[in-house]
Image (cartoon, one colour):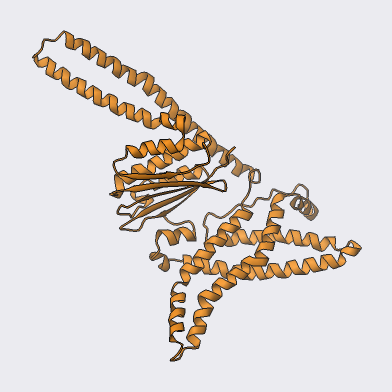
Length: 406
């Protein structure tokens, strides 16, 4: 899977990551962040000072409004910069202006919650983020430069330390770039109701798609249970009645026995299929019990550590179960693992799952591993997935899915 973020690139391919463009993209992200942050400080300080000094004559309102609106510009620049370390980008939360001209645009922006979140982000960026960008860059490159410059017979241990810091700089820079990007998303990502009509329709279609899959799965399960399964039971009864009319030791009796064995095997496979389509334990006892039940029948040992504050919403619970089930099926078919682990927690309106195995690794979506299907399923749930699967193993699949408990 080609990584979509700098963090994914570093986690999936920690060695080949050094030969990719991601370290340079992360470096550009932090360097431009320092420049944008310094500019934001200048604008904020100038606007606030001018506004407060002129506020006594009511003229200072304009500079203060300018400070608020400047945060929209800062946020727009941040969304462009985010593409350096996150290829998915981030849409703007702003709606079209209600009125014509600059005055209509200003009026619309001042009434949007997104504008005030962007103002808060601008203050955070000016007060802390750009300083941290500079600190990381100074530590990663400035410190090695100083140690090399002062190199003599007594300071060689510091030179060794500087060399280690310099060699680790791609990982240091990328780690902070990924953390900074995640924080930026927290502030600037659109909230419900802030997306454009086209994107809202895409989200609604995803919800309908998941619902239709769920309904279709339930219908197939019901048809198999009430149709094919009942016919197999009736066929078994007919074979039993036929046995009463066949003398013992007849050649036909042996064939009848073979037919009954094949029928029992088909019935058992159909029951497993029906149980997999709509597991009763999931509906009756929830996700944790269903995953534990699935793990108990898995061909290799699976440690299950799922802790949730309660039952997930029904549709999400079903989707998460089948997602875990699909990952476990991939492990059984492709990984050659001797053990696996399913870990799950709920943090800050996000369900976090980590599924690991000790197989031979090398999982790639384009190689028939099933990861593409998982990514598509997560996209419909507005979730995200990171995969770490170096050749030789182990494999880690990290999943984050938004979830709001009632």
